[in-house]
Image 1 (cartoon, rainbow over the protein chains, first blue to last red):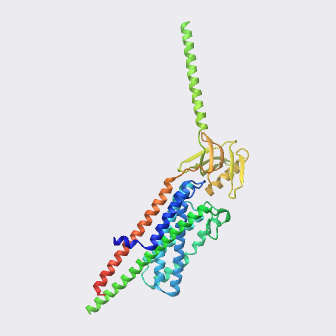
Image 2 (cartoon, rainbow over the protein chains, first blue to last red; image 1 turned 60 degrees about the vertical axis):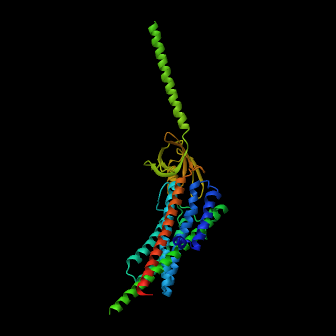
Length: 237
Length: 177
């Protein structure tokens, strides 16, 4: 029972409720798109997940910058938490995109600009986490990881504008400041996308928050182990 | 006399049977050719001769099956470029342009619809809207895989947090905090 209650975070409840609404809108309410048919409904999952992935690198970059400036452990923890959740979202983005591409483009993958830059983003996350996992612990690791985190954010605007910069197979931008008036979604499709994006944003925040707590617990454990061995040493002497 | 008549009758019957079978076979062929539904998909291959004239092209449909089509001078084209300008012509009139347009479609993954008979394309046009199959399997795959992974990750984090808290409580007990 406690295990279940532990998971019932208000953010998770909010995300689940919004997800329920989004699923109703996606499968019952919104009309089927004429060109692609039912498979187009993947959009309402793929775009919010991609948004979560980009949000992740923004948080990694912002908190890495704050760590370099303030040297506060909390920012470093937030960067790690966001990077790990970002890998999950990034992986999901690539996977859902590949499954969508197969029936629509007849290929699983192509070296197209938006896809390639999105893959690079995923590798940036992975490289960041690998660096942290294999570099010896300490202030230098945190500093270098923060620099990777800040530099990694350069890829985000490139991904966002890739479809407009290099007109290729990927559809143009449909939301945000770069969206062309001719390619924006209709009101029904836009509403569904907005609800789904909100649901995934709350899910992202919940995941980062949980991962942050884990990171805090890991740091506390290391500190306790250090105190424990120090007290044993004192007792022995 | 009777033998001659019998022989002539047998030849006539045989001829009639051969004719009937031939006509039936021909009709079946025409009938099946007429009922070949237009195929929609993505251009995956374009073949030209030494002069750059289109000779064959291949289209992959939504199930991944690759269909190769030959063309003839009367093959009609109605293809749009990136900005939506439609080019209408025949293979006989512009054999090089047809190859260029199909290559452009291949690079952009722009789908086309091909009407054909026995592997020969009669018309190649921009994909007719609303003809793509529902592909519910792909839709299910995306939702199932995504949710399975998100649930797995949330459960993994919950479990990891509990293990860490248990270890912290144990250590605190050991060092008397």
